[in-house]
Image (cartoon, one colour):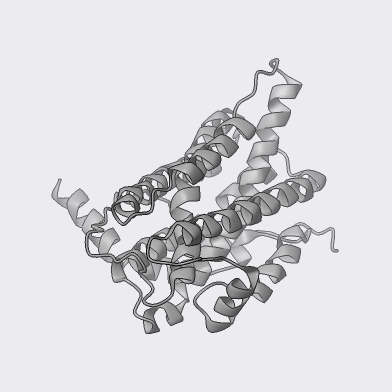
Length: 300
């Protein structure tokens, strides 16, 4: 691997703002990808993981603000906090709709809450080195997770197969609005990590933690949905089905997911080299929810 640290693509940086979007779920069917409960429920795991995860991001980043010595980065982090808080709220609002359709996610979300609030939450540590170490560890974990949220954001912006299969337009708008903002702010977490620490060994170690946790929680969530879907008999989630769905284009391709690993671990990595800010901004300029939020803000 090269020891040369990559530089960000300067033209990719834009001011970040939170868009106060809202979605109406009453017309969204249980299987919002018609005839494909596995794709539906694999993506639905986002609604269970993200509210707790992104609240945790916000909590950690508020603790990190005093460490930031660069004003432009501080502005980016504040914009990131606003966007992540809105993402958490938007996905949280899907959960009552799932309950109405016979899928109560509480047993699973309780596990996710424990993971972020207890396992990765604040610890009773003495001020100084120990407390700073735990904060830096969590900042690095967020940078690794954001690598994958940006990967997923870029994927869903280009997942034309979901349109061809008649996926529910409201759910697609939620996913693509969120995905576009993940692409839009994809460099912030990594830039913050590099600013406050940047230790390569910590980057590798926390990537392993984040990747293993995401894979474990995601397969567990997909299995939970498939086993508790009231319309399915003996519903199951499997890696084979994930791989096949990736080949079809309704889920991320396994090969693309695996290829993202050495990119993040490369010493020359920088998130601005991935995805397209122009594509993200273009979607946000046409998203029904984002346009409605902009109009409401203008009329207020």
